[in-house]
Every structure is written in C-alpha cells, then in structure tokens.
Length: 589
Image 1 (cartoon, rainbow, N blue to C red):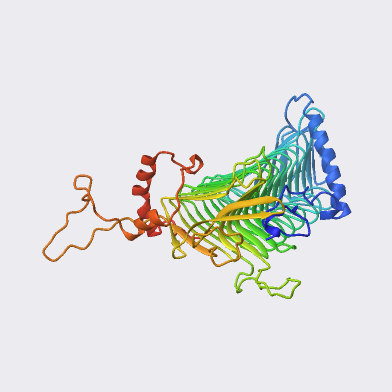
Image 2 (tube, rainbow, N blue to C red):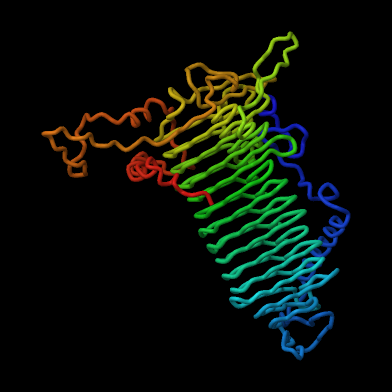
C-alpha cells in the first residue's frame, strides 16, 4: 500500500493514486516544445505587456486606423474592383467571395462575410488586429447562414492582441500549420448559431483572458502540440450547442480558472497523451453532457468538481508511470447531485474512478457527496484482465500475495488537522469496483483519533451479501491511518488486500413497497392518503435491508436536504423512479 499513501508530484517517477500539489505544468520551456515554441511564448508575453500598457491609452473612435488587404495598406476607405472586399475607412470590412492574402488592421475591425471566402498567408497571420496608436485592438467576425470564412496560415490563422468576438450563423474555419488557429490576447467569445472549426499545430483556440462559448451551433477545436481549447482565465460553455475539443499532445480543455458547462450543451474532450480536461479552478457541469477520454487523468480540477443534473462519461488510461484517475480534485470536493448519471472508469497499475485528497489545513477537500443520482465507478489494473499479479518479496523466502496494483473505485483521503475524509451516498444508486477496494475513505493523523467515514442514507448495500461499512486502522511510520471501507465481517482490518474488503459493491435506494396480490375472495383497496397502509404492516425486504445493512450517520448539509421530513418526502417522490432505472436509462453522450 506504499504508493497509495505517498504524495508524488504529477511528473514524479513514482506513481500514486493520489497526487499532491501538482507541479508547474510542463508546457513551460523546453520540456514541452521546441525552441521555436519557447521563443513564441516569449513573444506572446511581450504582446501581453503591450496589451496592458495599451489599456492606458486614450480611446478615441474605436475604429481601425488602417487596414492591409493582400499586402496593400490603406488609410482611407477602399475596395477592389471585383467587389470582393470593401472597407468604410472606420470599423467595417466586408468580404463577399473574397479569395486572397492576409488581412491586418490597427484598432477595432468588424469583418462581415458573405458567400465563400478564403484568406491564405505564409509566415504571417492571415487575419491580425493589433493595438493602434489611440485604439485598443478588437476583432469582430460575423457571417450569414450559408456563408463561410476559411482562414489558413503557417502562423496564427486568426490573431488579435485584444478581444475576439465571433458571431452569426455562418461558418468560420481556421487552420494553422505552425501555431494557433485562433488566438486572443484578451477575451474570446463565440456566440450565435454558426459553426467554428479551429485546427492548430499548437493550440486550436486560446485566449489570455476568458473564453465564452455561447453558441447553439457546433465548435470544434483540434491541437497537435498543446491545448484544444485553452484559456488563462475562465472557460464558459453554454447556449445549447456542441463543443468537441481534442489534442494529440496536451489537454483538450484547459483553464487557468474555472470551467463551467451548462444549458444542455454536449461537450466531448479527448487527449492522446494528457489529461482530457484540466482546470486550475473548479469544474461544474449543470444540465449538460460531458464525454471525456484522457491519459493519466480524465478530469483534473484543482478546486472541486460539481455535477448537477449532468450526464457524464469519463475514462482515463494509464499514463507513462502507470497511474490513472478518471475524476480527480486536489483541494476541494466532488459533488454529484440532482439526477446526474456518471460513468467513470480508470485503468492503470495505480488507479481510481473517483478520487479526492487534501493535505492542506487551509484548503477544503477530501470529501465526496453523491445524492439523488446514478454513479458507476470502476478502477482496474487491466480492463479485461484478471487483476494484479501476486508477487513475493519476503527475504525469508515466504510467498506473500500482495498485488502490485492499487485500484479503488471511489476513494477520499485527508491528512492531520483537516476535516476528515467523507464519502456520502444519499438516495442514490452507486456501483463501485476496484481490484483493491470498491469504496474507501481514509484520514491520517498522529493520534489516531481522526477517522475517514462512509455515510449511506436512504439506500442499502445490496452487494456483497452481508455487506456493511467496516473499519480500517493501521499505524505506519508513526502515523495512524484510520478509515472505512465497504466489506463483510465485524473486525477492524489493517489491509485492503483481503477478502473482508469488498472489491465490488452495489448501493441503491430501497424499492417502493408493492401491495400483495389479493386473495381470490378478497379485494384490497389501493393505498392512498385517504386509505393509508394499515399500521403494523411489514416493510418489504429491500426496506428492511436499508435499516439493517446500511450503516447510517448524520445527514450532511452539502448533500442536500437537512431535515428528516424533506428526506422522507424526497424518497417517497423519487425512489420509485430511481429503482425503476429511469435515470440509469440515459444514453451515454
């Protein structure tokens, strides 16, 4: 169990199911790119400095001071004879079946396109708006339904040292064979009902500020060397459309702040070599669908994960050190609530489907709350194998069955001086599996008084037979490890690698009591408020199991209602639907 309780950094050579404070991301410097990419980031930093300084400049007309079209610079209104482009000398540049070279401007520029438009450039950005003498850069792109704007460059395809706004019902296709497809030095917003396709050798879509996708159409971003969609601040996805982000060598979605997904949006994120989704802040999915496939991590949110009436499928394959965690947060909690459906799977020598840990007294974290939802959490050493291979390391020659892997379906862990780890399951169906343990809550302390707990309310442990919450306790290197797991028997265990600790468990709400079939000469009236069930009637077996098998403790405010009356009302109203599997019948996105 050594790796389970250590705190390796993300890139340490020793893998661990739980990860301590992550290291500075490896995209800085030569560890994640060539000299050209490092030089480019230095230039980008200089651009950021210019952006800040330009904010001090007085803003006069908020219009382009000049434009370049196809290499020719114009200071006053201009157009071509064919009518494929025209500039009004101020804000507006109109494109109508334009097919030509780069477009540049200083200040604010509105690009309105109709028909089929193609902008191509080499060794220079195809569309580039920079700060002017008196005006900050701002690029606005808008097109009509059925119109397209295709932009290709060996540099950034679309660049603004200020904000970028893409609106309308048309389609914008941006491709960079050398750098980013769409790059904003300020905020970036995609809205309307159109489609945006961005493919970059580095990033697909990136911004130094916030990124907001409020679009009922489709946004697709692909990256070769870095992030599919990346922002230094917050990423917001709403509007009811679809977003698909992928990367061959970086995160598909990355945020230096929070990631918020809502409004019925369908989001897919996949990475071939890294976490699919990473937020330095929190991740929240509300009334939305999220499908994630990553390496080492599926979702890595440093400041908490909240899934509220969300449909989530997440998978994590093993990283280069053998570890994998599907849903992970380090300094906050995982909350699944309000009819969410979550299917999480992780495969690796050290793996977990749900994992949260905290070893910082001034930070929240180390708690998992699941209420009124359906959760499937599976961690495997090998997805289709027979589990870890036992091995012998006893110097006396004695063979010990000690699996190499540490695989736990749902795990929460805290250290001394922190609110103890808690896994709370309320009115929910939870299926958890792990080659080492199905569910495990652990708290570490010097005196052994702090205990990690598993709390089950208005639900019963259906499998394993005779399953219950059992205690775990071990003294290791002067530190007490105390917690709970799902298992069988009454004894306190000091190892998870024993039969008493369940490797698979199913927890579900009790079935609603059904009236018995009437006898041939007897008719039973239907139960109602006016005709309640007679006193003394026996509960069903499932209800009895709820009171005998599930070890129940006090209700946690973070999981939902705090009053007993509210819990009873919710169970009566919603248990039948959950037990019938209506929430489980949701299809994976």
